[in-house]
Length: 384
Length: 247
Picture 1 (cartoon, rainbow over the protein chains, first blue to last red):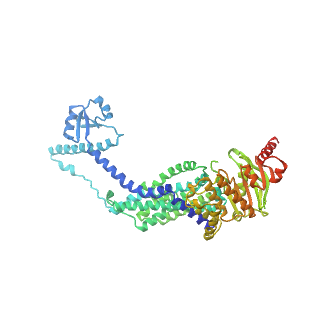
Picture 2 (cartoon, chains in turn cyan, blue):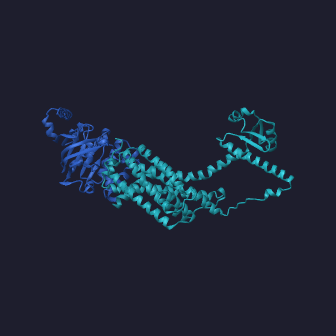
Picture 3 (tube, one colour):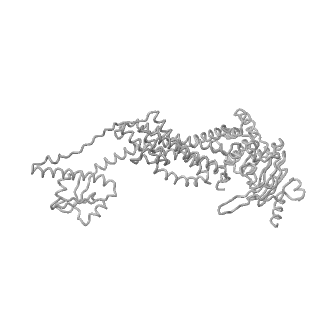
């Protein structure tokens, strides 16, 4: 029995290694995606922000009072004032003739009414710039007024100062513990998806399932050989993702001022903790695909499943989810929290035992269901 | 001898719909003789062959090989079985040798034995020019040669062939026909389905004409041809189907 499982396993792995689509989705994507996500996106984001910050801001006004204040607060060339009739200010904003329309009312107080289109992200960046200039002006104004009464010391009476006591390493762990569990869960599931579909419904579509079922390999051997190959690819994808994240952190330690990378032991433990997810979801995807008649049908079953997993896999991103027994009983959430705490090196043994125990039970259930699925006659039939 | 005893096969569909694909058929497949299962599309040929390949289980009845039910020791029976389905599906990312080796290993053969046996099989099937090409890039005929090589590798006692020459060129068909004839001379049990009645006339010793899940005729092809003297097998086939329709 063992030999047949191994023969089927080896053959499936050999086919995957020769399949460019599998190599792209399981090797190239995880290796390139994270450096691109981590550094490419943040690089372009900061570049874009600095570009927007250098752009001229056009401020519309109508009254003489408003102009007086604006001239004092906003200086060219970064700020340009534009006379805009009040009733036309919406059109001027829509036509991008101005970025903001400001109306200042001066009575007992000085009220700044600022009109702008909040649906544009660039406007928010520009707004924070003009807001800080107005606040500067306000401070100076208050100070000037207080000088008259010789009580300027009141301004500095209450001060707030914060200091980050976390080391750069701790900050690195914090960032990694937030996003790594989510990333690994999604990557390992997507890694399993293509191959699980290929070894189940793919065989039906290619017409090879009959040949295999007529061989002396039992249906259980077929299920186990194929299932193990799916799990291997899924775990390999997760491992490559961990390596890729680690390399990225080693190569760009200046990112966000953090300095952290996982040692080999941590990589090994993180990989071990992602294995239950790899194994369970390989079994689920394997099971679901074996009911489909075509690859397209299988994809339509699995897509909603992946969408469902996204939210619980984000558990590590939410604050306040601790290693409690109820959390240990929620699939996916428990693994997400487990990986997070492995990185913090704060694992509670009971949480670990319940999480692993529950994962094993689920795994056995889904493998038994996969056995049953392969005993069905429908396993032979594609869309013929 | 292989005996199909009152074999029935129903497919259960949604909304309690039942398709009776095979309605209680009896067939005998003798060693050293080729049994041709003939019938129009949807008659129940593939279902019958799939049951002989243990891919499907009969709803009723039994299949005996040397007086023992094949379902009592499926794995043992499968080691004696060479099954070729109608769709010639092979693994596209494997080379022909790897494909054949895979099934050789699943049949419990040693790698060394597979290697030496493959040399003989490849020579017999004139596969020299395709050995360095991935199966996915082979033509239909070449793929069928690889499938034949697969079942030849462990020299099985039973051959179940569903449309073995379907869609093949003349030269490949000839190679396959030669293989079937050689297997017959070796005393193997052979059952094949075919649409090509002239091929059945030339190859088969016995025939079973199946229509609408029922056997219209089973027995010696020679006897059948003798009964309808002067008619070709094709004419006899249509005559039998016509008679059955009238019933």
